[in-house]
Image (tube, rainbow, N blue to C red):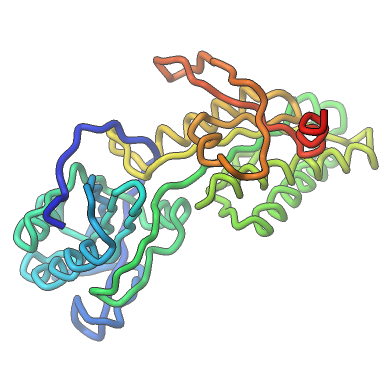
Length: 323
């Protein structure tokens, strides 16, 4: 772990966070059989929850596990509880989840335990962490493991939903919306996606795998194509956008940039289409997925041109390969 170093790198991702979690092992703060539970209290006060970020270089999972165990050894004197961490070996990044009175107390534990100071630390909400990242990794202290915090974000949006309501009426439009929700949720269950929230005209979800996110988007569009052939009058079209990134942003929010980019790509997709970021396309390399030529887009909220790719339905991709 001695090769951990500070780096001036841009961060991407997540939204707002703020809440608390508890790590327990009997009545103490440490131990092999530890677990997370809602509401961490020290001295009768609820502790805020924080997520920090480390940039690493040549570090193994065993190195990170050893550093985390050192944190557990000294955290009590600082009234801090290091709950869990995510370690991404290929990207050489670690993110620590910690209950602490304040960011300085969390940093003091790192400083005393091993001297490895995070690049940044943000306050987060427990529910938001679980929505994006799922349950924190749960392993006995000192046991080496890898668990990436990198996520792919997906947005769906019903095309012309206002006009649809005017055409069908409120009751029929709600039936169509339920069809959308059912189709998206079925695909999420089948392909390991996690619903984050309903946006009114669509759904926002996250994936640990970019290729599964794209496969999910394709499955959703295939389902709506099937519905359109069976009921033309109440059929709908959906746009889908996907982006990917890490959990802590330089603005101090959770997956902020990736969420914004996925939403903008969704809005820019063709009706019935899927538009993905360059990062998602690169993460799908070697998979049986096909993308159209790159599009350079000017998107609101992004100072630079964004390169994006339309995902080809598998039938069209197969025809193109057979030419």
